[in-house]
Figure (cartoon, rainbow over the protein chains, first blue to last red):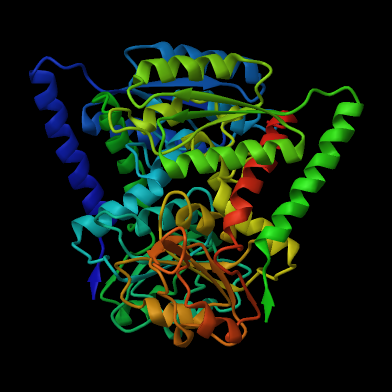
Length: 291
Length: 291
């Protein structure tokens, strides 16, 4: 069994990006620039954005953090987005979600120029990904593809079962895994809360991607001997023995499933660290103006 | 076994649309207006467009046919598209594909205002469909959904196997069948030319949607007793005994598969007639300016 080390892979990719950025700058190109809009003071969002800013430093990117209080209006946000769309120095930008309830997230997402939408949430990017055109793929699916690629995991013709049909993981992951590219080209099955044959489908999977958000849902008897298991779950399960008061728990019962696997991602340290790394890859891509 | 009669269903829907259009006009609304751009004189395209114009008459729509010769430039087409985008009388329009080689189809598709893109090929519509936002769904997937709906075929929790991963059938069909709506909410598997376990997947299908374009590919031993079979294939197989010189042939070996099915679509007369009908439904939707 090989443990897929998302943390080490992510660090390595950031180093590779830093080398490429240094080379670009020595050739007279401008420094890639990621901007982030953060509304309010939600603890999780603060941490995520701080980590993104830190990753920018490691990669040699310029970063700009734009903060608003919780009572910011949609109009003010839309105006700022328009400004960032037209700011030639900004290659890509994100609006950290979730937003306060009085703001329509979809309006915000659709206002972003898709060529700067490094989160890959704009319908144009979702559509272009489905059609197979150049686009920004959202962080988690892009991170999983990168892990499959770097660990040389064969996917063509394999049965890939995806648990969960969310817009940010399940659906894009399915599209990507069935496309005619590497990694991809797999027979793809998407299961969800209403699937009656979920266990049987899991047992047939060569590659199992669990993204339901149900801690320890995947048990040993649901996994085929030699399967590749990718655990996207990151639920905070209360744990009084820890300082934080919780334990980050995946969708896979790791201890009993791992011995059956050819490859498996741990939680934490698997898919998680790859998401910020995907954002960095997208920002570099944006800076190259490839589409 | 129930034969799904796409021709009769399609006629009925067009009558329903005609009734709704008459009611709208009596309430002072304008007549829905579909425009079509046809380039060159390809026999198939001529027939399709003529049928679309005819369907508009049946539905009580206004239609406009805009013709260009094969040597039209991309710029001229883009200019016409811009004009149609801004023409308040035109609710929706299509550019009949395929286009001559010197024209970039993707440029043409992306130039269409997605709110008038009744073919549903614009990346914004593809993306919005995937996310679950209001959109235009392309003709074949929309037609299949409508057949499932009108024949009251249960789909929630069922295993739906789709053969083929094309941008116009396989991929959108997969997205639609897994969404949380009715019809939909199914466990969806997409198989294709590189699938190693295709036959086994087919045998497990409660609903089998064949869209590979391989005549008579699906045999009786690939279908479960009681399955629903939707045949999207329409290959012209040479047949000297016919005036046309060919026989329209589906992906399913109908004679041997039909007896095992609970529902099955014939070829011709199944999915085919529904496609123009989907275009009419989309045009009415466009006229209502719902998004």
